[in-house]
Length: 223
Image (cartoon, rainbow, N blue to C red):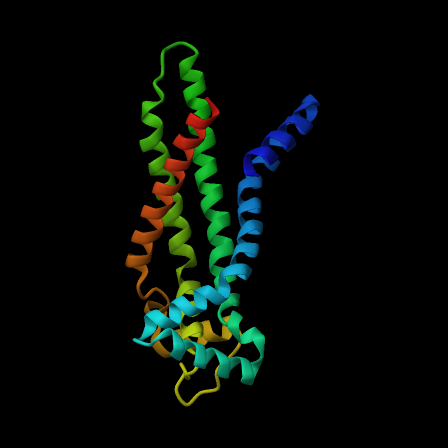
């Protein structure tokens, strides 16, 4: 979808020479916009499963115990309780996708243009593309993961509240921003970045592998 939109807008706006600047501007922002929109649908679809995963990992419990907790939550707060934590998840994943695809596509586009220019007067092997795309994916995953990590912390805390009170002896807020302020006031900035290194290791490695393998497979299938 990303590549199709880029090709379409490039063709539409560069068909008139005076619109080439506008075309470049639109094309640069297609990856983050498309990534953000697709992530919204993805988060809404898998949010109940993410809630179940977080809750089951938080403490030893059987699937039956989780089901009982979920039933109690639904009876008390309605079906929407199954989407607990979706707010901070959206605030984490939507900016993550936008930042990731902008950083990655920005570097990729300029690399491919440079390689095309060089290949016009010398033979350039595509064997280096995999490590280059791997590096670009790692850079994008690290950048996006770092700036969105506080929302990952709040998302986890909100989902752990299902069936128990996270803020002991306090009224639990349904606002993500209030939860951020409460956590910051109680434990400081360090709390908002707790566990940042393991998550950055995960997002950096997963992003690098995902995009590099995708690019290589896509190129081989298009031959």
